[in-house]
Structures are given as structure tokens and as C-alpha cells.
Length: 163
Image (cartoon, rainbow, N blue to C red; front, side, top):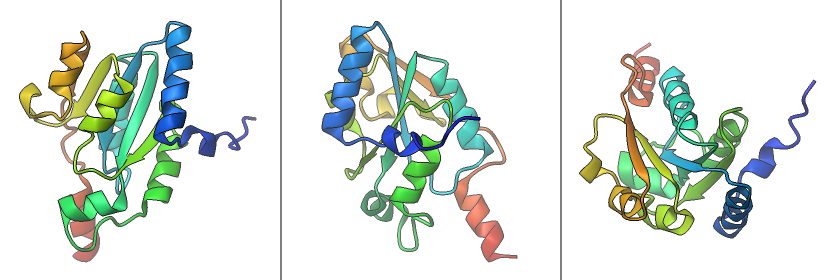
């Protein structure tokens, strides 16, 4: 049986993440990065994270901090606090590292960690994705995973409120 005691160690600060990435690169690992709010984890998130993990050896997930989500989604969000969201994502097998960010978008974080692959779920165009231009400038790839229809945090919240 595997121990869950290593799960919190996957939640990193930027300096610690930069050290881990340097170690991974030293042994030839490629790094994928994706991000989101992940307020209420659902099957659409799992599908997107699974596809993101297939793009490189290591998957780093950036999570919008509570203050960032309030600015993006408005009053009453997030439903789950950042520490709980980070712990849930760190517990997933396909996720190698989790980092919180407070800015409205992860561009500065992406520039700091320089992933080989930037993965975003949704119906974005590459030019709309924060950090895409920068990733491509150092020879990285940008992948857009399609949305899994029928799953969204907003629809889950609406369903609960209307029950």
C-alpha cells in the first residue's frame, strides 16, 4: 500500500519548484505546465490533466490563489479554499508538482519555470493563452485540450443552488 504522506511535498513555492525543475531537467525530463482554478474538481478536470500529463515527463499544475479567483469569478468564489484545492491536485497520480499563483494569469510563473509544453483546456486560440508566446519563443509547444462537454464548476454550483 502506498503512503499518502508525500502528497503535501508536491505543493511547492516558486523557489522550491525552480530547484525541482532544475533537478528534473538534469536527468533529461521534459516539463509540461497547465493551470486553472480547479474550484470543484470534476471529470472534465481529470480528463484535461490526464491529457496534459501525456505531453511531457513531468506535469506542473498552477492553481489560482483565492484572491485571484475572486477577481476572476466574483463574490462567493472560490467554493474550496486554495490549500484544499492544492492538496486535492497534489493527490492525483498524474500531477508531479502544484504551485499557487496570485496574479490574474500565470504568465510570470510560466516565464520563471520555462516549461517545454504549455497545456490549456478550453476553446482558446493560441494567441489568447497567457504565456504561449513566451513558451514558443524558447522552442516549446502549446497544446489546447478540448473541453469535456457536460462538466463545469459553474454548472455544478448552479445545480446545487437549484436543488
